[in-house]
Each structure stands twice: as structure tokens, then as C-alpha cells.
Length: 252
Image 1 (cartoon, rainbow, N blue to C red):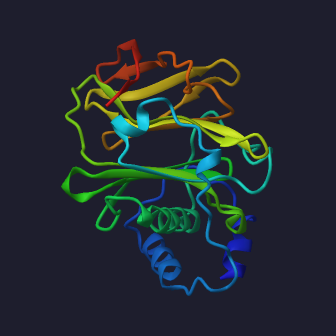
Image 2: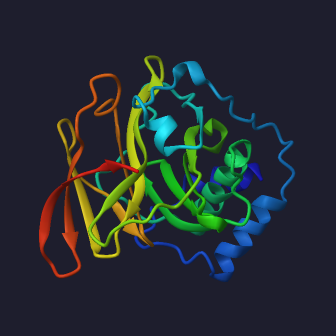
């Protein structure tokens, strides 16, 4: 198994999104799920004191939140890209398996959920799980340096009704700590008429979100929104008819 993870570093970034139902992806997922995890990789510790949550978000939009921050220091997000790209079958399998395991401590659990989104920026992937009974969850995890596995995740108790041109956040805010660095993310639901979304970062420029299967997701290194000085988060959306508009990302 160590050889499998070491081999990931030699892989070229995927240029297209992996089909999760392909024989190769399914075989990789089954192999990782069936592997005895006792080979020495430490389970992540949930470090709540290092968590920074937007005031009111945890109570309003998230049923539970787990945080296990990076171990690799302030350069943990050095490979970040403003646009997402696909995962190799091995990376996809690692990300999905890691997120399912990490989210087991949250209520409601992630069993029976389907993968709605899997995107990667640098070494880090966001996986959104669409659960049964309108229960959705997501996590962010390192899919390259598996021995430095870390990230955060959350789950929503219900899947809200979203209008065709609405965007609602499951989670928004900055997480991390001074020693390990911070990451700011927004993940949630996108209406059926929305085909694209971008966020203009004051430090990183235009950031392209993933919009797929009724969800959206993006993240940037650093602290950009959230905290006691909460300000509206603006984004540019593209509709199915080709028109665009500026919107405010709302908390569900």
C-alpha cells in the first residue's frame, strides 16, 4: 500500500474528470477500502481549538463539523490552482475513501451517499457526498501526500430547496491556524440554471468554482471571508442561456 501512495507523486495531473463507475476507478476504490489501515499512517486528530468558523454558520447550515488541520506547515497549499482539475483513478479512490472515513464521526453519517463532486487543486481535493434522505456532506483532503493526510469536513441535516438561479452555502469560512496556515472555502448547492461560478479573490484573482450535479465548490489559501467581521461574499454566475450576473452567496 505504501508503494501505491508513493507512486501517486509520479502521476501527471489528470486533465479530465474521472468516471467513478469505470472498472479502474471501482477497482482502486475497492482495493483501498479493503486494505488494512494498520500500516502506520496515523489517523487525523480533530483539533477544534484551531478551527475558525463564520459566526452563525455552524448553527445554521452545518449539522456537525470536524477539522484536522495540515501537518506540513505553512506551505501546505503551495500547489493550489485557481481552476480545478480532475483526479486520477488512484487519487479519486483515496479522496473518496478518506472522506467517508473522516466523516464517520459526523451526524448524520455518510453511509449510502454518492459522490456528487470530486475536484483537485494542487495536492488537495474537495469531495462532496450526496446522501440518502436529502443529507449532504463534504470534506477536503490531501490526495498526494497521504502520510500527511489532513483537511476538514461538514454535513448538512437537510438538502434545502434551491431556486433555478439561487446559490446556497452548506459551509463558508476560514479554517486552520497560524502555524499551519489557513484555507478559506465555500461549498453548497447551485440551482439548475447555473452552469458556472467564479469568485474574485483580493489576493489570488479570479477563482473558478466547480459547478456540477446541483453543487458548487471552491477554496483559496489564506483567510478571505468569515469571522466576526463578516461581509457578503460576492460571486459571478453564468446561466444556462449564456447570460451572467453578480450574486451574493447566501447561507442556507
